[in-house]
Structure formats: structure tokens, C-alpha cells
Length: 495
Figure 1 (cartoon, one colour):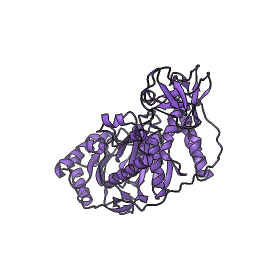
Figure 2 (figure 1 turned 45 degrees about the vertical axis):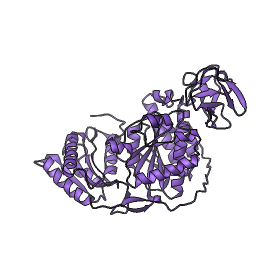
Figure 3 (figure 1 turned 120 degrees about the vertical axis):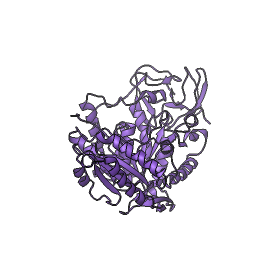
Figure 4 (figure 1 turned 180 degrees about the vertical axis):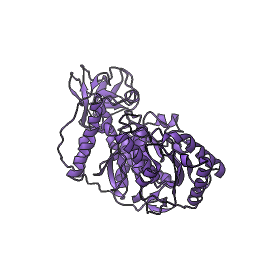
């Protein structure tokens, strides 16, 4: 295993694969460099002398500029690097037309074919409130059904409380309706009970119409103010749904029907070297099989957005991607916030200094395939292949948005670790082996072996096999632990 890694031939920094001590001699492309200070694992070491204002190059692109003199062998971090990002930009379309020669392998997974022809990878009973006022009711209903059925016959019985559905205006109100509708229509649910209060802004009967085309055999509505005993009536409906769902069986489904969301959180200096490129290789493979992957976290595309724009299949998609980026930049600026101050304390501790550096690592999750679709927040997938989705970088909000557009699972890379899961399986892929060993109840797959000399192709083959097992019913850690949450994007006032 190498001790430091220069990622791209044009880079003027290298990444410490293992922690380095001041005075150590490192070899980079035949040049011997003496380290001037301790360099933590995942962090950057200068391969040349820098003067203030000079760009730092990593992944072959500028990730910011130095703010002071930096000598060869010194540690480059957030204290001596500053972002180059500013406000809105003008973009022009320079299509790259990526061509990937990846053969089809006719792989399958075992999923549930729904009445409308869609496919789910789980067969669960979901209880969804139209408004936060009935959160207590839906939690009681879920617990009671679990007790009465011993949780047998379906993959899970879950309530999904949230804070919204009333006292909202404009986009916030519409966002709540869209996300809840997307949950109602999601094929991972074999049965859904929607519980309303009756006086909320998100009126149950109006919301029912908003869910046009839902399966009336598998989705039922209950309005608490219109029933004498909402628990008894709710349980009667739930048992009807349960009796239908428990008869569903898995069948062989082509991998072309699998849809995965691509997400990262708690990123570190290894994210763009191990786990994110692994997801990129898998995403390209899945797209080549006719499947679908979705990249979101728009603010974490800033600094790498032109790479995605130029991979758009046509100018219309290019224009939609430009609006995707600039709309989020305007959102930041309208609140008086800079567009380049994204890296969290955990990111910086892990070796990420600027948003450009984070973005160039983050966008590797979608590989090199052409962009075939661009989705608004809450919009459902309608084109196979690689899609871009409008949502913020916040882990819970973005993962919920990925599930809501129709993804069967979320593939989540992390260098710092996180236990959460959204309402579809949320697979955690560690960027480093130490995290996988320290948090085995959080991490489902270790990509850290890639810098320990396992070939990326071999890791990707193991990862693909694992994804297929999960799609066929094997639980990931968030499911085993019962960590299941939703979060809806809020931008406006609360009444």
C-alpha cells in the first residue's frame, strides 16, 4: 500500500493514505519530498512551493487558492486554502459525449411486481400522516400492528411522522404534498394507510385526489376527526392491507428495473479516492444494464457543475442543469449566505478544505455516463439512465428526496460515519477501513480496501453482488436497527 497518492498527473498536491510524521521522506513520481509537518490521513501535502493566490490542483482541477506562502512538503488545509467560488456564472455547452463500452450481463434480482407494472424491492406496510398533528396516532397504529402480527409476513411495518402538512404556504406546502404523494405511490410499500386530521392545510380529500392513480386495493385513507375511534378504525384498515401484502411473493426482475440514489455524507479525504469512484463505476454499470441512478445534493456540485453540464445528452438538459445550479445559488444568496462555505467541521477534519474539493469528489458518484434527465424536487422519475435531482446537501432531506423520486435504495458513502436511514434501504459505504471496523453496526460495505491494493474492478464486482442481494431482500444496517426517517425541504415561513 502506498503512503501518499497523487490522484491526477496535473495535481500539485498528494493525499496521505496513512498518517505521516514531520521529517518523513515521501516519493511522488520519482521525486523525494521531506514532510515539514505531521500530515493526518486523508489530508493534502504540497508537492511544490506555493505563493499567495496560486491555485491548488486536485483531481486535475482547481480546488481553491492558497492564502499564504506554502512550502513543498507542508500541510494544505482549510487554514491556508480558500475557495474560488463566488456568485452566479454564465455557462456554455461543450458536450463531451461520453462513450462507455460496458456489456450487458442479463443480471436479475428478486423483487415485487406491482399491479401497475412497477417493481419494489421491499414489501412493507407504511402509515403516513398528512399532518404532524396525528404523529402520535400513526406511531400507535404501527406499534399495535407489529404486536398483533408479530411483524411476520411483510418486510416491515413503519410509521413515518413528520412536522408539516399545516401552517405552510407556497412551495413549502407543495413540497410536503409532493413528498407524501411520492411515498404513497412508492412500490416498496405493499400497503399504505394515510392518516389525516381533518382541519389541516393538507386536506385529506384534496390530498387523495393529488395521489391520482393510486392502487385503491393497497392504499387507504382515514380522517381522525370523522371517526369515533381512530385507533380501532385504523387497525381494521391496516389488517385488510396486511392480509393483501402478506400474500405477495418475490419474482425474478431484470436489473434494468433497479433505481438507486447516490448520496454522500460525512465525507473525508478518501471519499473521492475510494467510495465515490466505486459508486461511479457501479452507476455506469447499472446504466449500461438499462437501470437508473440519481445524483442530488446540488450545493455539493458547485465547483464541478460544468463536468455534469457537458455530459448532458442535449442542450435542453444542459439548460435544465444550469437552472438547477443557479436556482440553488440564488437561494443561498437570497438568504445572505455565500455559495462556497459548504464543508462541515467533519469534512475539514477528514481532509476536505473547500467546496470545490468536496464537489469534485462528490460528483464522482455518478461515474462518466451521459445525463439523461433532470428532476425538480418532489418530481418522480420518468427517464431511465443517469438523472440529476434538485435537493439540498442535508443528509436526511436529500436521501428522502432520492427515495421520493422513485429510487428503491440509497447508496450512501461516508468517511466519518452516520447511522440514519430514510424510508428505503440506505446502504452505508465507508471510504476507509478504520471506520468500517469501528462502526460495523453502521457500515454495510467497506470501500477502504481500494487503497489497500484491492483492484477497483474486483471491489465493484463484490459491491454489485451485494447490491443485488439487498435488492432481493437482504437487510442493511439501518433496517436492522429500525432507523427509518423522513425530512421535507422547507424554504419559507411558518404561519
